[in-house]
Amino acid sequence: MSSLFGPKKKRLKSNVEKTQEDKQVLDSAENIKDESSSNEEIQSFPINLNEDETQFFTQFDDLGLSPQLVKACSALGFKKPTAVQRKVIPAILRGNATNHILALAATGSGKTAAYTLPILHQLAKDPYGIFAVILTPTRELAKQVKEQVTALGSALKVSTALVTGGSDQVRQSCELGRFPHFCIATPGRLALLLRNADPPRLKNIRFIVIDEADRLLTNNSGFERDMAEILLAVHGESTEKASGRVCQTLLFSATMTKSLEEMSRLAAGKQGKLNLKHIVVTEDDHDAIAPTNLKEENPDPKIPYALLTTPQIPAGLRQEYIFMPSRVRDTYLVSTIRNLLSNAGQIKGDTSYSNKKKRKGGKQRRYKDINDSDSDDESSQKKARSAIIFVSTCERTGYISQLLSELGIDCIALHSLLTQNRRLASLAKFKSEQSPILVATDVASRGLDIPTVDLVINAELPRKTTDYIHRVGRTARAGRRGRAISLVSERDIELVHAIEKASGRELGKCEEVTEDLAVKLLGPVAKAGRLAKMKLMELGFDDLVKQQRERKARERHARNKAERAAKRALSKRDEA
Image (cartoon, rainbow, N blue to C red):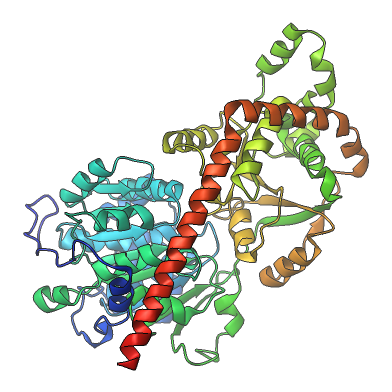
């Protein structure tokens, strides 16, 4: 058995063309050799177990992991494996490279450790070059995955490279040139590096993990071209012939409401020929496993088909709504913060804002109803310590955060218009509890694990039910309890019904926030709103929003043009 600290093996030269046309990428992605015909296997699981026996695993020792990884789990406070870890870890360890896995489990159930631990176990046996590529839809999630991989693999001294947008491309390219064991990336930046004159060599990796697969592998997601190029670079025919290695694909998500057949095709670059194994973890901790036959309506009569498509809501999550007129949405949002968040959304003992208002003379009076703290009241102990407020656009995120700041409510913003350093700084400040409120777009809705989040507020309901599932999944994680409040106007009734149908639960009515409490705040919120708009205009925020819209329009036009060109090329080939 080779040592992880030994010299790295010489890698094969990459056969990825230095420049690829959109037509060639899409055409090649559909004609890659069927992996299911390969008999090459990864080293099997050390002991033979039946599928049903995995339910008796109560310790990480039972899963067959190396002692170093078991110690790392203990040091990180992982007392026992979760349901998804009990199923996924043995399936990866004893499987072969042609047995690809799709795992569906609720948010906060430990999916990251479920795929990281078995990959680290296999890496210790045969360390060489880039061993695994992990793809995530957002930069924040990629950074979080990198931190967890580094922590779990600390005893093995694994090397990782973070490849995301907003950072220096040259530095990232150099890091990949040193062949780290893990490449954690967002599809856009990794695909951009693959188009360079000297692209990174990915054709000899052992695992490719697609985290939040429902976001990355659906149509009209914006990731289609990037994912096609990455998967083409990973699943190359020349590698299979020369080295005998086949890359194993692992798909993970909390929601999977789109066609599984389409995801299978994209995952392997073939028309639905991927040998995909489903592992579905239900809410009551009873696991269901179904070998996939995607052409059948129900893969296994023992498992309800709805189980494969119904999103999972954490058991400890309390879902409620507040019905209000759409024109006073901001007032109800402030009232919700005032009544449900400890210390009215301010850091306890922080009087800097109040003192600043007092020095200006007389202006602190209009904020009295908002800044009065109930921290001495016994009921304040039951209020949330920190909260995430989700809004739909970057423009609204900037406005809401500035509005709350004008009202003396401590908050920070997280959206795609911020620079990468500011995004990371905002997230770090919120995680360290320096600020109790994070106002964010859906960039914060996927995968982020912040244990202190007690409350999620949907200031605006998302158009897709899957986005709602991921938003509220930022609380009540890992068996903890949490609360999700949605502000519902007369225009959102159909969205609420769709959410209740998709999640299988009804939303209760929030009794703490009433119309009388909101009416008292109409004046202060209106004045603060005008000041917030003036401040944003001074900062040039409107220009940034305009530039973002123009950039997205250009990208959408280029993507549609490339798709039309590819369709014409395929049509001509079929006619010939």
